[in-house]
Length: 282
Image (cartoon, rainbow, N blue to C red; front, side):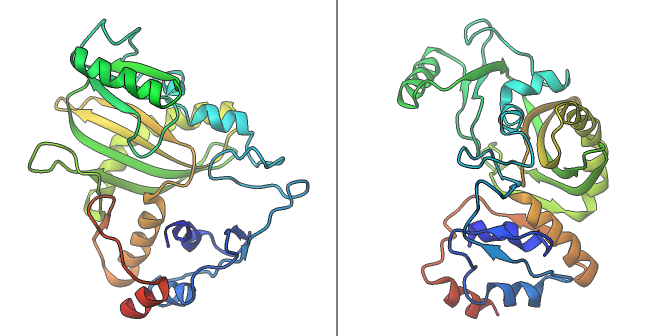
């Protein structure tokens, strides 16, 4: 069901590419039942690469016509582009030995993969082995920041630079001191989180517009104990939390729901078919 969740907020103006050509039986009926104002999308399983222009999640080499230039899209998705957008980010370091602890990030990775904290030579060896095993990807080295809040926001950039704000989520610390990979979507905190992150969004949008890029986007911002913020990631695409936030706004308006949880951790697999799952939750 994972690839389908983005279709829940697509609307009906343009078709959604889905490899199977259609979602699992019962999914659209389930969305129509539980999502207020749901607009049924249409699906295709073929793209005419010579004729069709595609708004892509990320650049796809086989596609000839992207809505956004694929080279620009790839550039913006890289962590080496962040320092071109803003000064409100972690300091770039020349190597992993100038200052420790430091943080090493591969420029193009997702889901917190390819991120290493280098505190000693053993950490350095682990990172060097990762580079060998991964085909020597490009990376950046930045200063380590002891953070107190880990937040993200999601929005849509129009070509003229105006934005549609979808909302924010926050990762909380667990009992062991590490941040949970689950994202909390708390409606009571939305205005405060928007106020905290809007200055970062404005700089990102300004840079993207200069590059003639528009569309969905999400950013991650870390705040230290003094309240200083650091832009650490930009995702120029529909993010995983975006459909959850858009859905939660509708559920709040219709049913008064105030809390959402976007799960990434834990064993939450369903051992059965999607049809069985939908029958059980209906």
